[in-house]
Image (cartoon, rainbow, N blue to C red; front, side):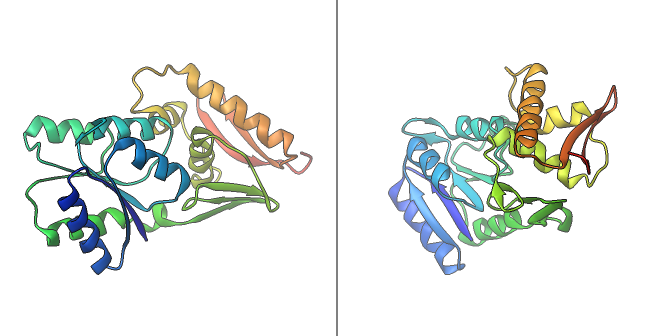
Amino acid sequence: MRILVIEDDARVGRVVGEALARAQLDADVFPTMAQGSYALSLQHYHGVILDRQLPDGDGLSLIRRWRCAGNPVPCLVLTGRDAVHDRVDGLEAGADDYLTKPFAINELLARVRALLRRPPQLAQRLHVVGELVIDVEVMTATLAGRRLVLTAREFHVLRLLAEAQGQLITRQRLFDQVYGHCSDVGKGGLDVTLHRLRRKLIDADAKVRVTNQPNVGYRLSLHADA
């Protein structure tokens, strides 16, 4: 498994990177949000460890940006800001865990391992609906072997619907899980995402459709005549 570390203190970054390596976890260490964010756009990471006080801003802004884009990568904030309101801010921004400096390496590794664990229903890597295959780990969707080009939000909606295994998901739940950390996004944003996802499935001649039950919710359905 590969971990992204965003830490501008070279000594801390080196210590964390070496500890992860001893735990048989690959680590890439970057000193700025810009470099870390670029790395995440190119490489799949199983988790992120990041500081708050970085040269180009507060690390929480990066987590908010990822969550708003529908990226669910597990994030652990590692920082010297230890006030209760700081920890609350971190968790509300979308962080999965918050550890303050100074820290014990054994505790950091234990928290990282916990971060990487998922209940079986969440850990399932592949979701198959007809000819549609959704790979959660690498965030790809293929239709009869052909990759669908989806935005992060479109993929997140498609994944949630596939995980529901044909059951209805309410509109509110979809909105909360896809846009919950984006205070500036209105409910119309979900409509746009659903419309584009439906259009892409139709254009790909998919037998899978996003259908809705008015005033109830949405589901993935198979249409033999599609």
